[in-house]
Length: 332
Image: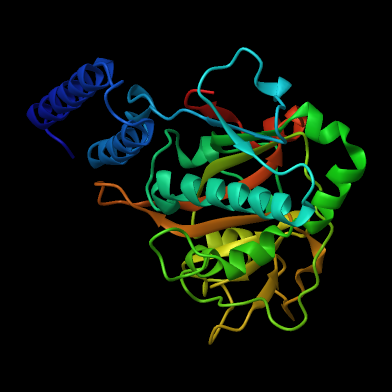
């Protein structure tokens, strides 16, 4: 039981921390890169857990801004970003479907990877709330009615001109294979593939039974970071097992995990949420999410547990995003 004097010290410490951080974040950060400002706010939020986890985090603004990327053939524009500032344009060829597909794959996978790293690979406790307010269950690949907190890391739009060239757009879309790109390409400066990095270096390849699924590219794609707290072990909550550790992949609406939960020796294993195990077959979906579950790090001795996920969404499907995210933070 804390004495009145100890309570006063804790309250003063909280007030001092909040005031200091407000001063810090009210400074003009134009001279710093947006990513650095975002990373600092993420680390600061995790640091507030040293005294009262969850209750003080809402006082620290999440200084993260959604990145906007327009993919277009020469001369095109993305009407989805009309009037918006800070839009990055990536030009794809208008007569080379394979090359255009490769650029779309690169842009999407890099956006997923950047989001994952910007949010410290999902390992930190960064969103406010209690177990009760953020508790959720994963059923059939969908979050239930009580949804977690999210940040929209990036929005990737396709230009009107590109989409209206129906035959060419369809040819490009048929060539896009995000899963294969993750397995055969690496981020700049890394010798590991995206697939290995997203699965704690456990999964090296998809195996001989890999079959490319059809890829549907909406007019605007969003990569969204989600964090959820659980009352106990997220592994027992979601998968009915206590054996899971580390990072893994979730395969679309099938609700299956790929990676460390049941992977061994670099062999790809898929685990259904019911706890059953089946050999890998990735023909089910191109809609892959990467995730990590376990204790969420902060300075607090009593670590909260949960899961962090980066998923790919159709940004225009507002109802689905709202069903996944109880609250969206950051600057859109």
